[in-house]
Image 1 (cartoon, rainbow, N blue to C red):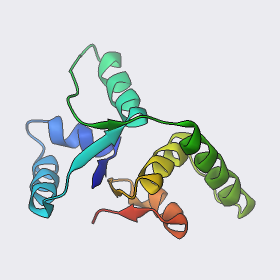
Image 2: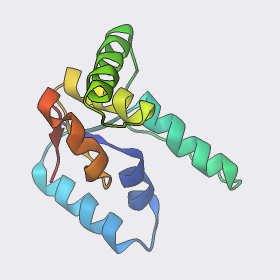
Image 3: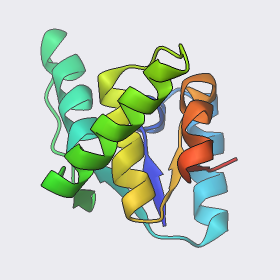
Length: 124
């Protein structure tokens, strides 16, 4: 299963995005189910609303749960102990993907590679 990060969602919906088309085709070729998280939906819709656009997202979505919160707080603390700065939303998204054994499709690999030691798989 592939969890789409916000940046990938944005690229895919842009009609003229060559990168979005390439990502979409690669995901289709994988034959895996595609999902996102409630955190990604928030980021995505927030960005659209800021520029006065609206879109309905019809994609299976994992909600952020108490168990996700426990894992994401652990991830954030462990990385901070090592002196590694991470974004809170990134910790939350990583936790959702790790707990559900999803590969994360993201263009922000530099940030999310930090979570590989905790079991995050990145869709290449």
